[in-house]
Image 1 (cartoon, rainbow, N blue to C red):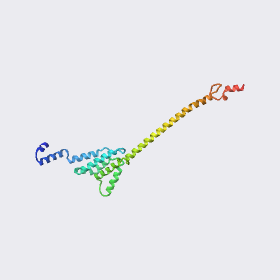
Image 2 (cartoon, helix red, strand yellow):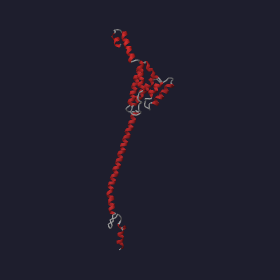
Image 3 (cartoon, rainbow, N blue to C red):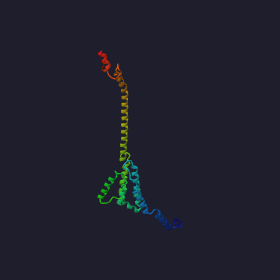
Length: 205
């Protein structure tokens, strides 16, 4: 049907073909639903080491905001329940900040909109992916320090064990020598000669 319309050399036929394609494959309502489904099914972002995924979410939110300029059905994203659903995908440390910002907007006499959430997530993504100062980079630094301290402690314990082994090894000959010196020359038992019964008998003669 579309092919037949296109072969007709008229602007009216072209517009009909274009509208038919739009209705079947790109109806604004379907487009809006696709955006909504992708946002509401986004995997929750972890608190540690997931700044990249927060950036991806931010980029998609910006794309969605741009689409709202031409797809009127996307106004449904301003619904507070959908905003809550999207907000639930954020890292835990972001959620209290967004709630505070939403309350500040409410105090000014209006409800938070999708565009407010987009701007918030953009700022949080910039913050989270800062290579010098961000929760993720600081946690990574802390993990690095912990590994270094654990390695140093292991080296210290190994050194102490080696020291103890060395001391035991050096004490063994001395201990054997001490036992040999205490060996009685009369009965070959381990005691002083003066306390040997045989020595006492000899002395008493």
